[in-house]
Length: 463
Ligand code: UD1
Ligand code: CA
Image 1 (tube, rainbow, N blue to C red):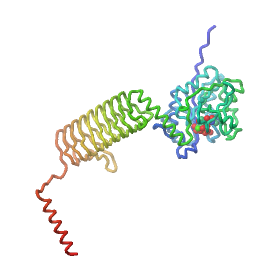
Image 2: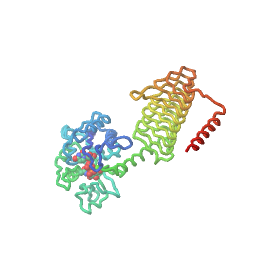
Image 3: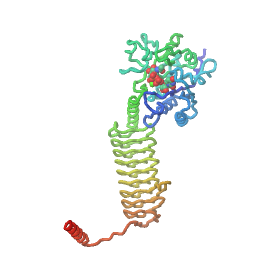
């Protein structure tokens, strides 16, 4: 006798994302609220992709161009299904009926249903949720124990076996005391999904079609239902901004830990804010109160001093930033470049070893290797209509308090005298001075003061 080869079913994910989430009190749909620089929907799409979903269906409120754009950007190729009336989570899954009904011979793909408002879930957990299907379960639910079960559906058990999930609104006081809660997410075998979902009714306190009712129906049919445990921190749903704040804290803790385990020192980790895509290399040192907005990559051995804010930035090995620096819009520091306090960079590249140590704005600029930009230098990159570039050659020296009116080029090794307003290109190796020449008048001050006093006395005599 030969054992049959295991059936390799593929995975379909249905992400429920319809509805405003009235308790958010927002003009933005709930699932577009952001955590660590990415929408909750984006986090969930990333998790279902990591779990290996071959097909992704998103159920969304019809006509939401913003939601459609987000899906197209983060999970192109996903199918979007409108849910016209918001009649509950089971009703929402059925809006994506087209992806449930195309299994051949009654087999069908494995299905996981994820919620757009449960953003801390990982691909690994979704894979664990799916696993019981391969062992013959018809339904698997994700459940967590919590001291604060209010608002969640409770997982009701008899002995060790699950019998039903009861929404809080429908629960008796004894059922409300249960602390095993439904995380909401569910795995369904393709063979049973559609038949179970179609039998779910709406005879309950909310008058909604509840997805968790699939559990009691499956048990009633004698099918097997698995409960897969998940840590509370990963199961948290977001229904209001308090929960959004709690989820942000959880995601930050996760990101900090992974940066630390990757070899970065965060001196005061709880004060460093990271984005989902922040990359910190080995032996990077991050001082307190630093914000990494999206699009930041920091190579090995860089130092980010306190109170700096970075967005869309690339720091190459050994670069140093801050304290109190703001880098944005495609700033690049090549190896060993230094940006000091109160310096802002926008779309500017500093070559290896270049320095701008104090009080400077460099926008739309290219700074050559080892060039030194003095305190108070400003690139005047905007004429009120268009942006223009400033190019500073390798080894050039820009004296303090200079204004470089773009478009302008300072050649390699050139010298700009401090206080200059540079409007013409400066050739390589030249000195440019563009300011009033100093005049010194010996003894002038005392003579002037005497004259001023005399005038004052004359005025006093008149009145
Ligand atoms: C749901 C579960 C509850 C579980 C909790 C976990 C149901 C009936 N209840 O409750 O057992 O403990 O999640 O967080 O499933 N959605 C739609 N269309 C709808 C209704 C909901 O797309 O018609 C989407 C929402 O956008 C949201 C998700 O489904 O992303 C969950 O809906 P929500 O109303 O937040 O359910 P909960 O009351 O939190
Ligand atoms: Ca919810």
